[in-house]
Image 1 (spheres, rainbow, N blue to C red):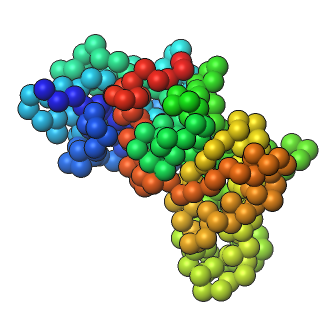
Image 2 (image 1 turned 135 degrees about the vertical axis):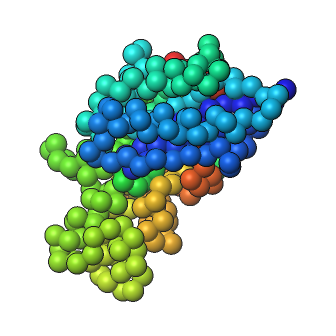
Length: 310
């Protein structure tokens, strides 16, 4: 009898669910997606999560069992209550996602299995440490630069969740002195596009920035470099604080230019104050858009089961 995990990924633009094998293989026919957005409410998010879970569960092969559900969500998360309050979905604050997923499992004939919640950056970091770019590292971080900016740590093979489960919210650290903008407000795709428009650029999206920068538009290129420099400075600080061996960067905006990761690495090297933090390697994530779901699954299936620090 084969074991599977139900994986749920909740982000600012979409909710996804899928079944994942104990070996870390995503069952393609189980994968389901629904859109979210800044106007998402508790009711809309409940409906979206319900839809994707109900779409995923019927793909469970005959004779197999679901050993639990892992949820990676935009945060902050509240582990004791099983609720989430995503920064980028204020109308969904307080959504009882653990209770909701447990009820959906029971509805599907799978009652009493564990449902484990972590923020999405932590789930991604766990995935990359299990099957991706940071596998085997003693201390690693994985981050996403996309609609938002977030990350998570894995140290000694264990995800570093912190006191409340929210360790790794890099995007909510200050990118500017004196209580100025957060890293997310400087470096994310929408923020970079907004900055470029303020400089006279006429595009509107990260995709437009990528196209125009490749065509030689100086403002579009400057917006990309501004994002990469801010991310690099933040990663140098993280490497100094946690003594990181490797950092993996993913997310849609990290692909805005072919050299984005290299730009981040150069900025981090220039900003890092100590030799060990300058030695931190910065690479691209290896798992692509499957990473968040694999990380959510890894919360409940071998070999990552039991590795969480709370």
